[in-house]
Image (tube, rainbow, N blue to C red; front, side):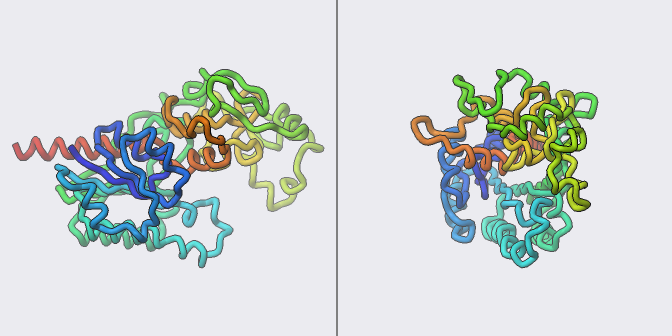
Length: 349
């Protein structure tokens, strides 16, 4: 069985998907200790709260001992390359690029059989990514990468991600799409079965199915919002002054409702706020619930995000969900690796 270690694991979206594909993920590494409970309770793997710069090849190799095939995966925190960080100075962005360099260092030192990385699309244009790919090829890896549109793989979310897969065992290719626009998983199919909520309500059967309270002003706004629309649908007195300025006219997706029969917008770390994107429920006068955001990230309904008896920290949970690799995307990558291993073994029989 292939054995994997997940760098920058967060609460385990990538780990969970890869495990569902049949890869034994034995450890996840992340500097954020608040991710430990959700990671370990949902995955048969150990959480290691360590800065990537402190991780050594010896640590990784201990987890790989006895493995038939070794797999090193990870999603370096994407903020330095994200559209949402365009206002961040280049100097601050460069400070974060060491994360990918550290990933490359561990690949060089460990030489796993398979490597996979997921990140934001903008990274594909950066020199740090070009260097990562070149380094893999110099080590003898076959490398493929592409921008993957998540709805093409059954994820009900308008999200594009950069996915890379590399191996030391022959050629490998990107996974084929499993869906077309005619059968994309829609918002209705994903979350339409959940119990209705009113603004600020917490479902008594599922504390994760809760939504933020709307102010009187935002309640008036959402009542004038239409699915797929924007603040341009409101009466003039409801429109924020910043949106009337020339610089704010392009922000048409904020304060909007999702559409039932389309995929959702990209789930961010602020998906539970009506004013942070098109995160209004398609018909109920409220923002997305935390559970709805998790489902749109393709987390299963039974995924546990907090420890009973402990304080429920809504901000931390929404951040964990928004930062996660969609579980289904991890599963697709894992299936591609498993299929490649099987094909190789059949070839050598």
